[in-house]
Length: 513
Image 1 (cartoon, helix red, strand yellow):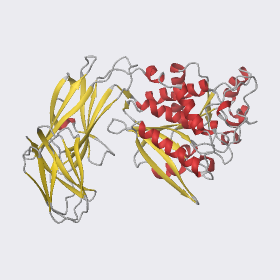
Image 2 (cartoon, rainbow, N blue to C red; image 1 turned 90 degrees about the vertical axis):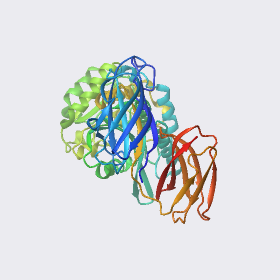
Image 3 (cartoon, rainbow, N blue to C red; image 1 turned 180 degrees about the vertical axis):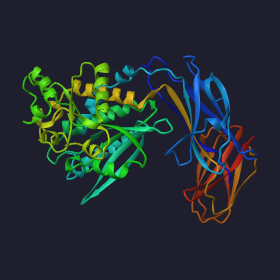
Image 4 (tube, rainbow, N blue to C red; image 1 turned 30 degrees about the vertical axis):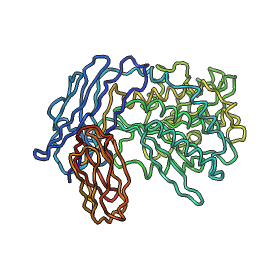
């Protein structure tokens, strides 16, 4: 049986008033299938408060949103550029009319987005509060606090409106979790960028710097960037088990990277909060001067002060490393950045720079950088019970997060657009029982007759033509009989009644007079 839209959602690219130009607003009004001509008429409204024309594109997914196809060439009507404000209509002729689709209409006014305005939203108090909440032993030997932190990271990602996935990591006596928040790119074949921080600690340290600062920075980046749309996908990841040999990031690289996923870069935040402007506060391995003479010269010229963030890259992926340093210079000039380029994995100096979650990406030949304050070579409280927030510098870690946000906004391609999304169900598993509704049209009461049904209890849902759920009721089918439903609060109009559960469903058109 053919189905109509079940749900719609409007997403705005910019959630703030700091930008110089606001994105257009788009809202889906209705989607009406024509079963005789195998077409779907989509009606939407468009409004741009700045008076800009918009470029309208239509994308469809037949794999539940995993991938999208631009179907604009299969559409007639108000599609393409320029589209002016008003109520608009387009007609789509799908190549397969017997399928279920996720659709998104993208309205882009093609105006530039002020990246400095995005960067300026990074809140030092928000970051500080996150580190305060994270401080405490986050180790599998202390599962209660660790579990609460895992739930908090997941809850924050959900509150930002991200798609959240959990990768379980079973080891003896513990199941770890990589917590992944996804802001899907709006290009048809989006590249992928990752910003991460590991949330576990060693078993005797509260881990404010290692790595509460990295997790707080990742979550603050997620809070800001989730308000925007990008050409490319950004993933925000809290890795588990870093302190036990990349126990989270290595399985992620091996098992969770999507086949064909075009991963372009990883920003690994590994201790970004310790700052010391005193001379000789920055130490380094004895082989550092020989391995990295340029970086050593910069440190020596500044009396070896620990007042910078180290941008660690690999010789094959210097473009990503350069992107961060350039973004920092433009948008956060007060942040001092020193680049260190690893050339091989066997040199002792290089091995000291392989001790975090960027390493598995390097080992699999994927671009990544590590941003770090230097761990034990600067922070005397590294892996001790004294690694607490009182030892950290709020402004320093904030500036590192600002530079990371600027880098991602540039690389992922921020867009001044809005997106209206909906589900179009033209085919579905059928119920194994019959049902009927009467009268139709109705005025007040609807009567539902259910035949012999093996599906168990069912849900009844009623949607308007925008896909908005306007009525919901659970139905017990143990005693199949006529069920009376009071619908006198529904406005006059055409609705879609859906009945079913996870095993299958069916629907009927419902006219309210």
